[in-house]
Length: 310
Image (cartoon, rainbow, N blue to C red):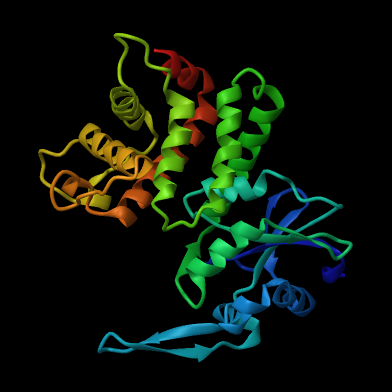
């Protein structure tokens, strides 16, 4: 029966702290793949990447040694980490992959297997994920609270699209643009430009003569939002730095870095951009910040709309 139902395959290695299965929304069940589904998954991974052992990452664990090294050990088949969301009907809920990405757990869907046996996926998105994660055994610990958050985000997105997407078109556009970020390699500096593009879509109006600059708009509006978030972002968890550094300074330096990239200039993390340390930390922070802003936009769309024009 399982192989006749559609499912989406989750690329991340999950350690799910639930008894067996969890219904995300009606008709969409998070569970471990059965043997037939695992075979379908293996056949769906591009052969070139499979050669380097991509699917093996779901069948291994890493034993850490006291000297800091480690070795890979094979898991019993019952402990393999092929996790899927199996669904009823002919089509998965389109918003689940978005809610998985927006969630704190940051869960990535690789592809969808439809009941007829066909596959649906983004070729570039799949390639980027495989390139970034082949043989990396980083496990994501998933709790029931994480899954409840995914459920709530799915309903939040559905409610917004059903009732408000035409009223708040910029917010609706930001959802599509966020989904498209998977087309860019996560470690690429162009991810910085793309993230700022979405933040500008949500928060920035075109500066006219005498108006605030884009940098000023972003740092003041994002600081205001950070103070309004349910959980305020502590930028020092990403960048450290002296007490004199502020949230607004970090945004200013990040936007300066974005301008370097967009204009083909070199960036100096030892001098002008030392506050943001380097590319990887900048991407991690901005991606986290963008998710918070999008979720808040879904909750308080009028606030975001008002911020954009002021």
